[in-house]
Length: 76
Length: 205
Image (cartoon, rainbow over all chains, first blue to last red; front, side, top):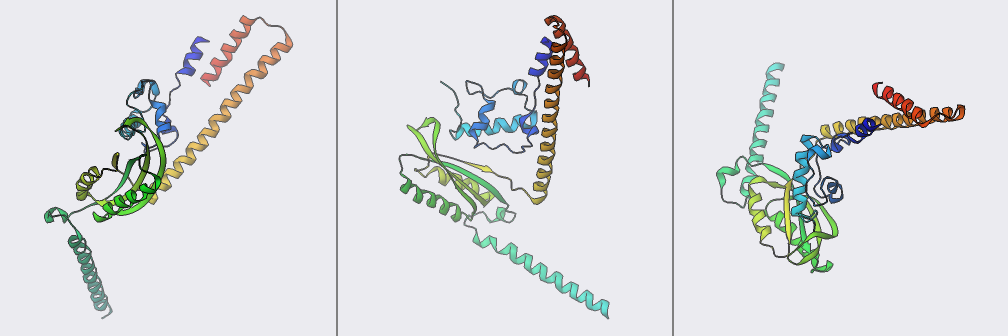
């Protein structure tokens, strides 16, 4: 059973590939929040499972959102 | 004779087209306000998206002249506005200049690429704007839209299939365990083993 559980937990997939999102909108803070940690850091690919192509776009979008005060740079 | 006539007509057509293209080329050049003429000959027009924040210390009535001012500024730089949107009053993720809330305003426009720098500069000098960001925005052509639609349809189908599979997988083991419970009281360890086997086989299939 232990094996089964770990397999289920490790089912990682790229959200943007699965949903067919080509361009990530930096204005949608609620969506981008899914890929930031509790300290508002960008979550690494090995944890979130986002593919490399979308991770690059995602990082760009998060950084833009931070500049426009849609997302925080740090969490107190 | 007919062939010659056709040729003549063709030539006329081409000359007319040439003239038209010349006109097209000539028109934008005198309309340019900037100084560098050499660079302007191969000017490109890009589609941009501007998002800016106006602090909440301005009331809604004061907001209107500010937006009009910015739109006028873009138009002065030969920009063509394609979309205006008010994203509303939002809380800033962190205070900027002691302001915790702001009005988010979105403008989409077409602009010659060589003017962008000066537009950035003049926006920076507007005091009413807390912060702004200009980003290139791709306009989707019809082909791309069709492709995207096809992709979305495919994904939707895949999702449905996956959901059905999950449902089927969930229902099957439940029924079997219930049957077993009904037949005999099997010890928990045996049940676990059998369950493991079932799950394993499912994975292979």
